Image (tube, rainbow, N blue to C red; front, side, top):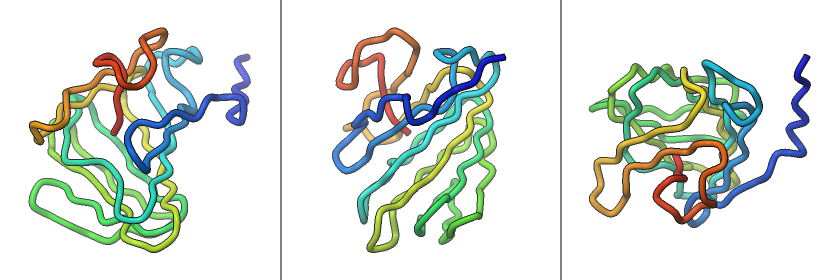
Length: 139
């Protein structure tokens, strides 16, 4: 049995005002899931991007403005958005307090392609360089 101590997982800065903690992934023995938490300062979050796999984005605490293709919604604590594979989406903290979200991807690694030319397509894999390299990234 693989018991994962989440408090022992490192917290990483993925971009200014956004930190991430992997809960499970290929690094912890996952074969089909990548689950991570993000903590976002007001106004910040994840720019428009897409994944090749399905994602569930859950708001644990705070309020997020989430966009999925051309739709937008305010999503609060204990609410989730199911993001189909290949659909552009993103979110930002719409509140005044810290936003805590949990994302679950149907793959053991994180990969994202971004619409913005200022964001590089990213891939998070176990053992890759620390944030800032082209091999690590953020949602």
